[in-house]
Image 1 (cartoon, rainbow, N blue to C red):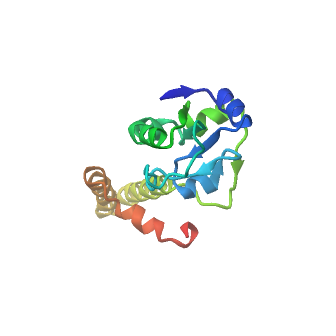
Image 2: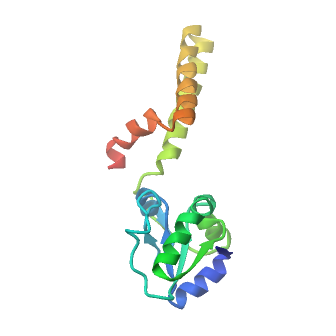
Image 3: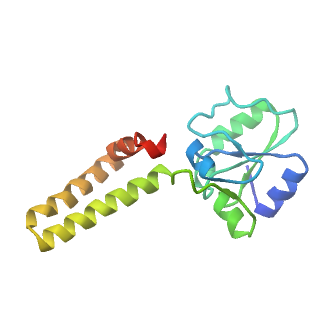
Length: 172
């Protein structure tokens, strides 16, 4: 698949290309490129992809370009099934913004879940370190527990903290 610049994407969209955001729905709600369609990679399969007109141009993007590049085989299958030309936006929405192009940002929407996990885990590690240093060394166990949880999440792919944060009212 050809990777194209944000300027090329903008021009192609003005000529009728379809821009698809494969990030999760919450990420798209928080910030997206005007006119882009939300079709999360986690739900995207060739069988449930929208029916694009034959010979249409479809451009996929994510946040930085990594997810779209990793899903290249899956996205290529969609292009073959629907007989359309498929491109990837270089560096995703980050590249779009770096090129000085505008996005639609809704600050009332929550930040993405992984950032919430990073902020929460980092806060607990910092808290455990401060309390362990100034109150009692037993508080270092908070940092150790969070570290063990992060290792477990990395090894198994299951993140209990992410599951818990996903249930919070601001993420509904």
